Each structure stands twice: as structure tokens, then as C-alpha cells.
Amino acid sequence: MNKNTNTKDMTHDEWLAARKRGIGGSDAGAILGLSKWKSPLDVYLDKIGSAEDTPDSERMYWGRTLEDIVAAEYEKRSGNKVRRNNRIIAHKDYDFILANLDREIVGKNGILECKTSGYSPDWGDLGSTDIPEYYLAQVYHYMAVTDAEFADVAVLINGNDFRIYHIPRDQEIIDHLVEKEVEFWNDNVLAKVQPDPINNTDIKNKWPHDNGATLISKKLAAKCSKLSGVNLKIRDLTKIKSDLQVEIQKEMADHSSLADESGQLLATWKESSTRRVDTKRLKEDGMYDKYATESSSRTFRLKI
Image 1 (cartoon, rainbow, N blue to C red):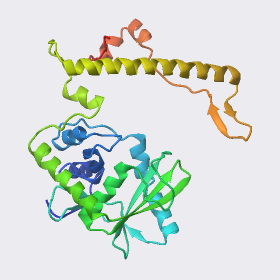
Image 2: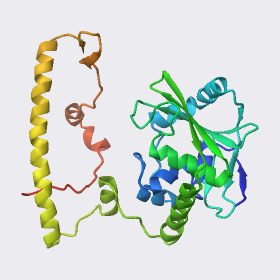
Image 3: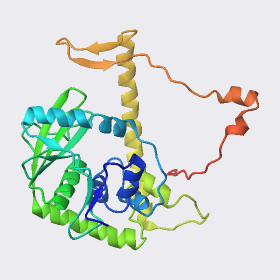
Image 4: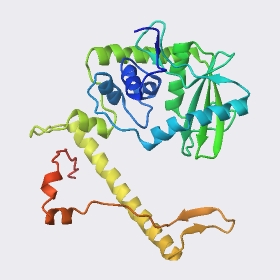
């Protein structure tokens, strides 16, 4: 792959295909197990071409749509000028480690990453470097590829809280990240070896079918016993939660919201509407079987 691939005239689908040729910034946190949205197994399946295409989520759509606005506000508040790069850049030593930057900072050896987010305690106070670990891995990945000395992360939180975080280069972290990415590419992607599952979705994707056999395990017997105790605690807490919610709602009656004496909003209880398919009517009209699809899945049930 060339060290620089022009993306200016690419369609979005072409851009996505180009990114599958290597490890991008949004893959970095997932490979380290830091992402809320995808796992190392998800990245692996995507790179070998076995992942199902999924449409953009609302979060992804609005992140792209608001990127220009976040970048423009960054210029106003920081005094820095930024520009698009319009390139997929490859690492000087590893052509499968790729970067597609949001913006370059003009006249400085720095990059800008634009984000939109709901409220999260992972976004620290202004002046700190406390940002979600997933995004931190992403900007270190970009610094590894570009040799940038810093990355500024501009984020719009909840649509009305704009913040800028300055992340200086940390070569020790970058070296560790590159090492893990090279290991993942060679030992998993090229070797066609799936990473270990790290969540329930991974488990279901890796073992979608059962073989009818019984596993005998003393170690897992102890873990099942521990899980049973956790379930009892959850059941008790769920009952407490339900009782408290009922007490609050009884007092709220038909009020839409609840506040304390200082005016601090405590809770809301508002009407909302949803649309559902009426399967009973479909069956009565003889249309259900025409559009129904069959699928199978495994269900885990604890028996103690």
C-alpha cells in the first residue's frame, strides 16, 4: 500500500473498504479491549471480510455531520487554524497501521480529533488529559502514524458543552500500542486466528450452535455457584429498585417531572409513543408466514 492514499474523491463505501486493508484509529481501542462498541473479535472479523455490513448508528451519523461545526468552533476558541488532510496515511514501518485524520493543525506538529458525545464521567475537567480510554488510544494511534507531537480533542457534550483536551505525545504508550497492533495483525488477522471472546456477543458469535454433549468441570461448578449468588443479590436489588420506583411514581401521579426544593431536576415521567407490528392481525390476514424469518440462538440458563 502507498504511504498516502488520496480520499478526496472516494465515496463513503470506498473509504470504508480502504480502511479494511489495515488497522485504523477507531480499531486501536477495540484491539486493546477498551471500546464500548466493538471487541477485538469484531475488528478481526471486519479485517478478514467476515463481518456483516451494518448501517450507521445515529451516534455515527451525527458525529460525521457535526464534525465541521466542532472543527470550526475549535478554531474560534483555540486560535489555531486547521485543514483537512484527505489522505489515508500509513505508518513508516508498518503499512497496515493507518490513519485518517479529522484535521491537521496548521503551522504546528499537531492533529485535531473532533467528537460529539453524551454526558460521561470519562470526560475530565478542562485542562486535564482525562478523556475516554477508547479515544485516547485513537489519538495515540494517530500520533504513532504521523509523528505528531500532540493531539487536541475537541468534543461537544450533550449538544451544549464544548471542551478541548490537549494530549501530548507519550512515546512509551505509543510503542506499546504499536506493539499490540502488530501482534494483532500478524498473530490474528494474517494467521486467521480468532482473538479470545471478551463479551457475551463474542461468545454467541464464536459458538452459535451446541453439540448436545455435557461438559464435566469442577472449576466451572464453583463459578456457577458464585454466579447463582450474584443472581440472588441482583434479584434483591431489583425488588428494592422496583419498590422505590413505585413509591416515587405514586407521589408524582400525573406530574411530568420531579424536582427538589432548590429546583434541581430529579426525575421525569413523560408519555412516549412507539410503533409495533401487529403480528396477530398479520396472522389473521394470512401475511405472517410470507414475511416471517426463522433464526436460531443459544440461551444460557443457570440451573442452581
